[in-house]
Amino acid sequence: MSSYSSEAQVDEVSLRQQAAFSPLHSSQSSALPIKLINPTHQAIKTVTATFRSHRTKNLEWRIKQLRKTWWMLEDNRERIVQALSADLNKHRQEALPVDVAGIQNACLEALANIKEWTKDEKPRRTDPFNLFGGARIRKEPKGVSLIISAWNYPFMETFEPMICAIAAGCTAVLKPSELAPASERLIAEIVPKYLDQSAIRVVTAGPKEMNYLLEQKWHHIFFTGSTAVGKIVYAKAAPNLTTVTLELGGRGPAIVTPSADIDLAAKRIANAKFMNAGQICVGVNHVFVDPSIKHKFIAALTRYFDQYRSGQSRQPAYATRIVNDRHFRRLDSLLENTQGTIVYGGDRNPENRFFAPTIVDGVTTSDPLLSEELFGPILPVLDATLDQAISYTAEHDHPLALYGFTSSDQEKQKILRQTNSGGVTFNDAILHMMVKDAPFGGVGGSGMGAYHGPYGFKEFTHLRTVVNVPGWMELLLKVRYAPYSDRKAVDMIKATGARSSVPFDRNGNDVFSLGGLLTKSLVAVLFFALLRWKGWSVSDLLEIIKRK
Image (cartoon, rainbow, N blue to C red; front, top):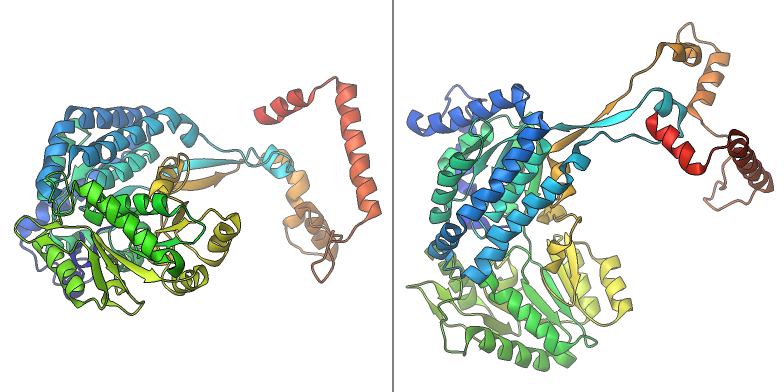
């Protein structure tokens, strides 16, 4: 999940101003005081040495750290709720499922599957070289990782990537967001108490120190934040060819067509906008509504926002607040400058940063409200047919999430064919990120890479192909040696399994071959005759191949 760009974990302006003072590429090692650099430098040095000792590759070490992570969350669940309340006024109903139970579930999933995830894979044994060379794919940890999290879900966005790194056998430096200070302090306190400090370190740093941190050599960086800052992180990683996972955001649309259940669509969109005060990367940024159903849709939205607020004039104590004054002023300015009409909400309190869910009607694509990811409780409504909504969405950066509300399978297929996004939920919002054993991540402007379950493990893992060529295979491989000859060239081509006859023509059309069909039939007959002669079953043969 991402945080808004101007207030994300890494300050874009500060990083650009300090880029010339890279400690790795400049004689001016840093413009920062030594006392600020030393703790970070020591943390990196420690986890690097630990990874080089190969201790984190041990499966028992990984399992123990994952188990300790589960108990760290269990023992501190009330403190986590209190920290989130202090930072965002987040109610426990929002805090516990995501920032405690959700992370614990990720822990248990990793523990249940880690032996399967880490074991060697065997490429297909029907290939002779794979079979006789004992080809396998090892799962190697990438190495020393940097995990930079955002403020909107500070525990989940720190610990879920950390779980992936631990499962893969990596060491990690965790950088929680300073914009959620109570959460940052708690993370910095509890991680050293529960987890191996030689392999997992927490560093607290603002924008100035972040420049130093990003200039170091990492084997993988996992960043959660805005697209603008994600580009900076990506650029910082490039000189060292460091792989990155960028969990960004984007202006995720909802598209409501006349075939939708209008009341249910309004209920679920209003819920997505009310949660966390709309500070969710997979939230609904704006809604395209067919003009024929717009008034009915807005009336339903109004009713549900009233219900969620316990009355239109209420500032409920359970409502999440805007994270800080700067973010509040940004939303306030966007609402002041819109050319649309506020038809619901609009009330806000700078003293406690309450910002009511706000519906703005009559918004056009050139409105300031569509100039950036809103990351707040403002909901612009645009008149648009399905084709117009698809056209606008396809012409702009791919969002992290797209929500189509329709009962038509044809319309669903049209949305999928003609747009792209990190994920899609039809007739609801946000829930695609809860699918088990499925990747969660963005594409293009909304990010790269994915995590959750096995996909997070793979982000921190290098797939290393290994083959052990026996000496007797020299009988087959000796044709590769010089001096070269035409005959050897022919033999080498045959050895690759290359075919001169294919079941398609030069125009790419299928070609039916009676000879090919008879050949395949003959091979099948001979294969089953061999099994019968040997007295083998198919399962016996599969077991023999598996042992090889």
